[in-house]
Length: 146
Image (tube, rainbow, N blue to C red; front, side, top):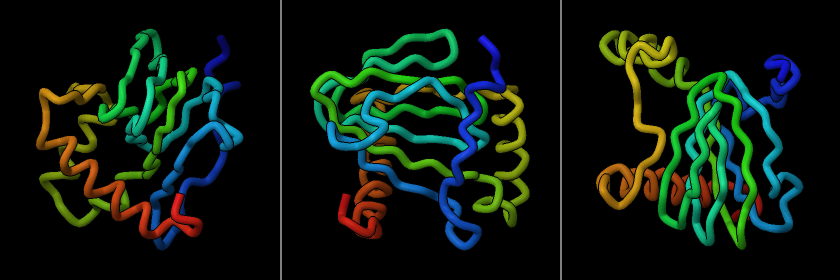
């Protein structure tokens, strides 16, 4: 596998709002998620059904209500099974540039010196609640409500 061949060059968000929201159902052109990577961080949440997801060399079956953290540069792709999922893709650097303590941790996360859970389930209800708040806000901002 040639790593650079999978680089997704699509811009996610704008300079003013460096975050993109995607609601993905069977009508979305990337419903069957091809393998790719990008420099941004991605939070993927399964709304309905299941998603068979590969993250670098790990495979997951992600069920409704679960959240996946996909770090910068991670090759990922997935195959939905009667699934609806939503993604928030963003570059965290501009969002955190004014907070020194957060910046220090962000740098270590990006360099993979600090490991973050890649999968959040009902065992982390506070994370899932925060994710639902994020996605609820993003759904309201989406041009077509999806």
